Image 1 (cartoon, one colour):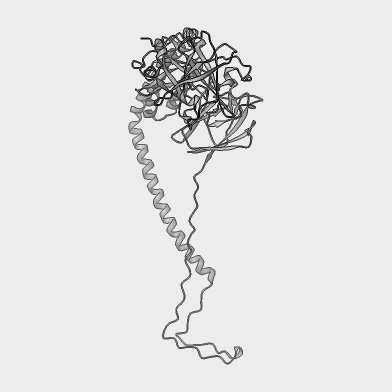
Image 2 (cartoon, rainbow, N blue to C red):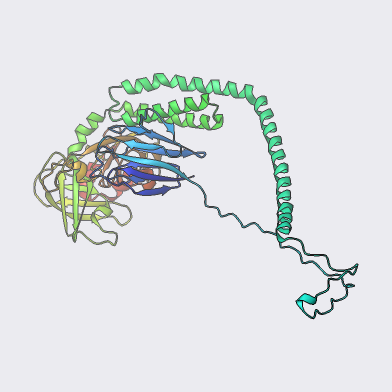
Amino acid sequence: MRIELRITSGARAGARETFDKSVIAIGRHPMSDLRLDAQHDLDVSGRHAEIRVVDGTATIRDVGSSNGTKVNGQPLIAERALFEGDVITMGGVAGASVAFHVLAEDATPAPTAVASPAPIAVPASAPAAPPAASASAAIPSTHPHAATPRRDTTARIAEAVELQTGQLRRMLYIFGTAIIVVVLGLAWMSRRNAAADRATIEQLLGELQQQNVAIAQLRGSANARGLTDEVGRIRHERDSLLALLRAGGNTEDVTRRIAELNRQQSAAGAVSKVDYARIAEQNTNAVAFVVVQRGDLIEGGSGFGVTRDGIIVTNRHVVQGGDGTPPSRIAVQFHGTRRWLPAHVLKVSTTEDLAFLKVDAGGTFPVVVGISPSGGVRPGTPIAIVGYPLGNETAGMGGSIDTLTAVATLTVGVVSKSLADILQVDAYVAHGSSGSPVFDQRGRVVGVVYGGPTEAAGRIVYSVPSDRLIAQLPGEAAGAVKP
């Protein structure tokens, strides 16, 4: 299903973008599929709304935006279907509007052949007419085998068209009869399975209704701060499934989605029980904003201290260009400070996306609680990420990089995949998050963020497992490893 989104208001008004994918993220975030202007469309959130396409049906939901979403002027409370020409409005005066259109597949009809009139043959036995002396002296033939006069051209064309349309009508009659037979057969099968379907639907409705208590507990949990978006998505999905079942939706698909909803709810419940305030208090001061200059290019990333004399862990791609170009200058700023500290590259890994910096200035610097082996980390384990997504746009809340006070951002999530060479988590990151530490429930580092697939809009995060980090630590940082 190909979708065209036409921006009708906002800084990018007049732009059109076409998509052929199941999830379309909309917002000001650089990793959004439909990216609105980050400087001018200020009422639009970084992650504002999502369009999902399932079995040829498009739906939209608000993903926890600050200023809300409307469809055709009506506030978007839960997930709802989209139809041709619907107008999606995000935010208020400084927001943006997008028109939804479904693009038809291109098709060029084949030209219809028209039969040429057949030539009229003159019987071989007819004698040739004698040559006329002049036009006025021509004598009409009265021979019984004289040639039949030619029919009118219009009549001959009409006869050919009638022949072709008659064949077409017969084909349509046959096709229509076949459709009627199929429809009657499906109706008979539907009636036969109606009782079983009703029983299944009642069972699924019961499962969804039971989720009310669990969702209410999540929303009321004192430790659920930071889970507002996730709980909102769970609630919207439940409401969408209830509506789908009541409308007679596909029970097999609903069963699969309920199982996934239960998994998400269990993960959110585990996350809500973690003391993230304690994790932040123990570690945030050790997370540094890293700025690297290569020629005229200045880029930002994240890192974290592992020794008191200023050894910092970050990513290899943060300190090196794609061609391996070394930086001309590096500076770091720890959370809550305004002091830029010059640093240099101490070590770059040749096998992992890891690098180690050393602060040039003397002094004592903050460190994380510790680094624990990642071998015991399992899918579903709650985690926290502390770093600087979007660089100085969040580190200093849009301030100048020369005058900002570094303020790190904490996001929460769960481990979705744990392999020897990759720790994948379901959380949120953006450019600038590279080098951020991933903490377990005890506040120990179990991974180092290095990226994620663009189409995931920052929700699927790849990190280097701490087992690989421990193997690369410089000797003087070995003390950071904790059991």
